[in-house]
Length: 282
Image (cartoon, rainbow, N blue to C red):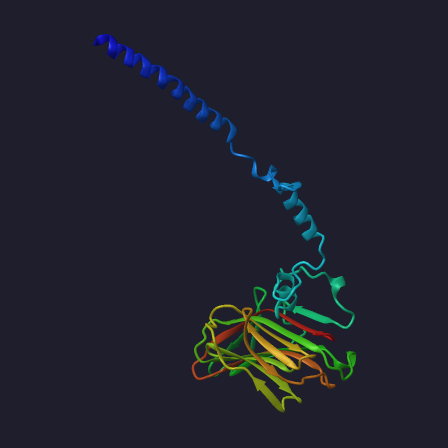
C-alpha cells in the first residue's frame, strides 16, 4: 500500500513541476516584454513613421509661423484689438508712435503756476487740493487752456479726459472735472458723465454711478469722433455711453477742476495726475 502511495506522489510531482516552470517562464517573459513605452517616441500611426513628439513640435512651429493665428472672431488678438480700453502699462507707448495730429498732456500738479485759479487752491504732494469752507470759500477751481483751436481749425476730433480724484470727506460735496465738452459731475458718493455740445447748449448724461469718493478713483471719458459717441469709465468700468456730435468749432479747449460747497461741506477735493488728449482718428 505504501508503495502505491509513494508511486502516486512521485507521478503527481512529475506532472506539477513542469507546469510550474511553464507558468513562471510565461510571467517572467511578460514582464520583460511589456515595459512602459516612452509616449513621445511612439509612431503616430502604423503607416506614418513620424513620432508623436515630432508631430507636436511640427504643429507648434506651424502655429507660430501663422500670421493669422488668433485673429478670428472672438479669438484673443481680435478681442484685444477691439477692446474699448486697452490697459497697457504706463509708459509702454513710445513717443515716436504718436501721430502728427495727436496732442497729449499729462498734469502731475507739482505746481499750480500757469493755472487760472480761485478760492482755496494748493499743490501738495503731486496733487491739487481745492478747499471749500463755510464763510471762507463757497467754491474753488483751477483751469487752463492747453490747446487753441487755431492749431486745428474747425475739425472733428476724438478726445480723452482722465483724472484721479477723491474727497477727504464726501459728505455734501460737489465736484466737476471737465475738458471742454467732456465732464464728470460728482455729487457726494455718486458720479455721472456729461457730454456737452454746442457750447453747452445741449448736454447728454449717463446715469449716476455710486462709488465711495473718499477713495481714490480714476475717471476717464473718451469721445469717439467716427462713432459720434462718448464713453465714460470709473476705474476702467464702463458706466455709460452717450451719443453726441461734438466737434472743435473755434472755441479754446479748457481743462477745469471745480469744488462747490454744499450745506455742510468744509473739505478738500483732491485731483491727482490728469491726462487730456486730442487725436484726429478713432
